[in-house]
Amino acid sequence: MQENSTVAQLSKALNQLLDAYEILQEEAKNLKDENTTLKEEIDDLELRNRGLDSRLCALNDTTKHNSNEMDTMLGRIENILGPTEEEEVKAIIEEEVESILETTTPDNTQNNDTSKEEDNKEIDLGRMQSLLNGFSN
Image (cartoon, rainbow, N blue to C red; front, side):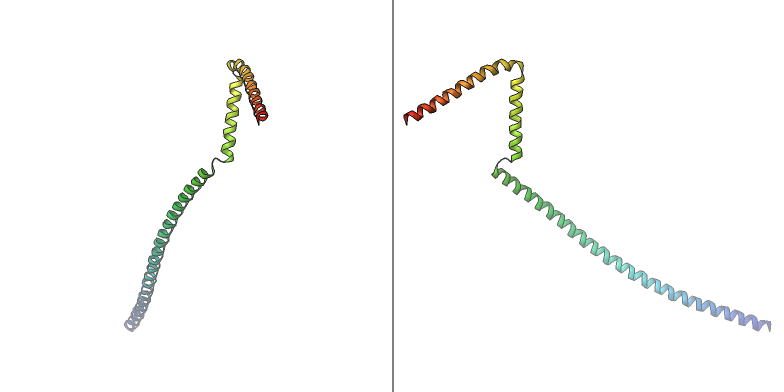
């Protein structure tokens, strides 16, 4: 009898192992299917990523090109319009600084007095000429 009970226990254990093996095979099949699906999704995402990267590069190139064109056009417009107020102000300030520096140096103080007298003479000559022209008309 013991042999029958042992055989029955072994048979029961063998059936449990076979059931467990079938369950494991089913789970392995499900995991393989899920793995395949995930790999396909990864491939699709990588393909989309490459497409987006190429679009991004194209947009960056277009943006750089448009920026360069706009800078060129702005430069041409500025050249056509002439110097800006800021440039004019800088030029005036530089001239004033130079004239102040010229007048403050010791050598130029004596020259400055004579140049003022010459300026006054030139102004007077200019006035006299305009008066003479006014009388002749």
